[in-house]
Image (cartoon, rainbow, N blue to C red; front, side, top):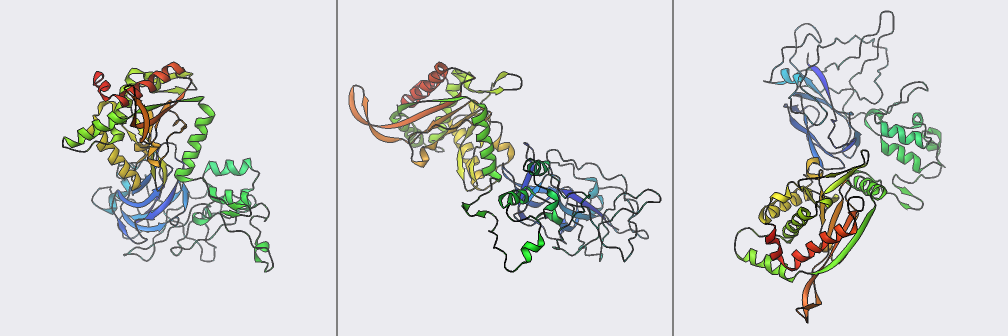
Length: 487
């Protein structure tokens, strides 16, 4: 018979511990190929299509769309291999890449921290379960539902055989697709929790996880279950009698309370909140600002675009000015290693830029911005912005920055004191460019004026260095020819 392999949510990198199912790309009963994407998930960093390392028939899916799963939780089970004559689960056929029979070996194309290159050493036989025995499953792991075109049922992988004289270990029994039975763990039994973060949250708030009924696959307790229980302490959690009484008070719907709407901090919003809070805790930041006459910069851009070729964006020109200023003031292109009590100064500029998308604020990173010209920067900004709006940014696109450029002028504001993008050391903010009265060559005139602000980590430099950087940026904005000295 075919062997049923369980594919778990892999480690997606960058310290991510969970992901939300956005869209299933396969159905139970579908035949999938090796490395075929089976589900689209959303992490705190980006939208990711997760490929399955096995080829075969999908026998079960775990979690509905919108469910948040921790890393290591089951995603799908796949029946691989060809039926064998005689035994129910005989020795595995020699692995190969030609079809489902060899898919158990794995594709070799792995995500961070998840290997698929080795096949199980052998296939274990399933002990027969007496017909009168009640079906049992391991807490937190849903049984595999079989929908194979060639077989009416496929036996799932069995638990290790019990020692001689002991009762046989419980075996997962297939159930109908979509059937979810919430487990009720015994007082001394295991709690259906995978994530250590969920356990810690419950422990720190004095919450007994045995009294919760999880909303995850097969009753798996998720962080949202713990948070919902902490928000409504008045009703005894897990009390069936309180819920069954017809005259009982109506409990507010999840996410609401008597004092207003409660919105969970998760996904991108939660990641941004954590990073900004950490920045405020760890970085002694300071901000300085200056007004600059951007009239000549706007004229230079118009002349470039009038000369033909790809259009040059204003953001690209500001980025080019930033890289030139960082070459003169490298202290601001650095990071502080608090554990080693050292300042790490970078010899490259990976420039992040703040972008507002439907998923919230994201900061894509332009790699090696110091080595790109204005045309190359324009193209890369456009590519990353489009990927951000479409939700296609990868974790690699959102990490590794050494300096951030924040053009908040697009929101119609003049100034801001932005929070440093931890673990970077500085951020340049650019307000809107608007006509204002300005003294130009000794006379009052209407000029295009912009406010520039620099928020910096006071540990990496003093105000003199920060002021020198900002003044150089302003000089380049007012007289773009100054850039010729560094080209």
